[in-house]
Image 1 (tube, rainbow, N blue to C red):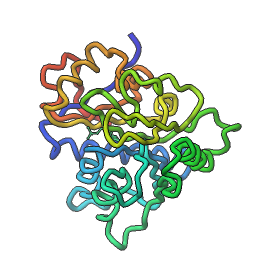
Image 2: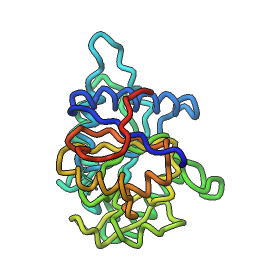
Image 3: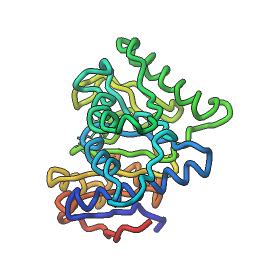
Image 4: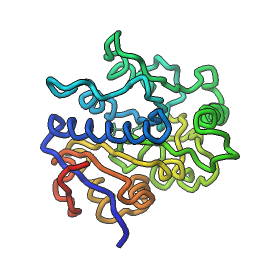
Amino acid sequence: MGKQANLYAFPGTASLAPALRAYVISCQDAGLQRHGVFKVAVSGGSLPKTLAQALLAPPKGEADQVKWDKWEIFFADERAVPLDHADSNYALLKAELLDKLSASTPQPTVHTIDPTQLEDTQELADQYEQVLVRSFASRDSVKLPIFDLLLLGCGPDGHTCSLFPGHELLRETTAWVAPIEDSPKPPPKRITLTLPVVNHAVRVAFVATGGGKKEIMKEIFEQGNGLPCALVNEGTGDRCSWFVDNPAVEGVSYPKRPFSL
Ligand SMILES: O=C1O[C@H](COP(=O)(O)O)[C@@H](O)[C@H](O)[C@H]1O
């Protein structure tokens, strides 16, 4: 059997957050060593809140090791709505995390979608792909972008990014960013990183909390069933780490590891 995803379970978010913080900082430092910046893509949903808990609170007496000005933040998926709309993943990250950075903190670079292209999701996806091309070098020089880290959520149906179970987008092999117009979870119009891009990242971290996720966690870790989250587990092996709380993995028979870097 090949190398498998790491599953780290914690009693609750209070203990999960410091581990997630340590993990993100280690990915940041590896990215800085590799190319002087940290290229990270983040999801919406419940992730930004947990991420803020992890990143906005350096341990007492410790200098903050998060080098925000070296961060290039992208969106793993985004909804085709204005940037100040309640459904916008950018607006969520801004409210939960970016707006809470102190004024004296050197700010990260944040790559949003182009809010003037919301009507045409293909154009929206193409433009966001160009944002990636400009950051990761030309499409001719790299087959796929290599993110230092993807911070992903897992929906109760096993979707991640805006890659939904059984959807034809799971078979996309060439685009880096793709449109979706029939998302089963509202809003229907979105763009998303594609599965090859997700599986090409240096590291992928999922965050899933709460008993509402336990049935799908069982399916992802015990059967797989072609669920998007399971496809990422299969595509990334031990480059993939799950940060979960105990209620989310109650009854899941998959080895949980003690967290270590
Ligand atoms: O629609 C979305 O849902 C997923 C999962 O959200 P969660 O609230 O169950 O964590 C999220 O990862 C994705 O970015 C978002 O667009």
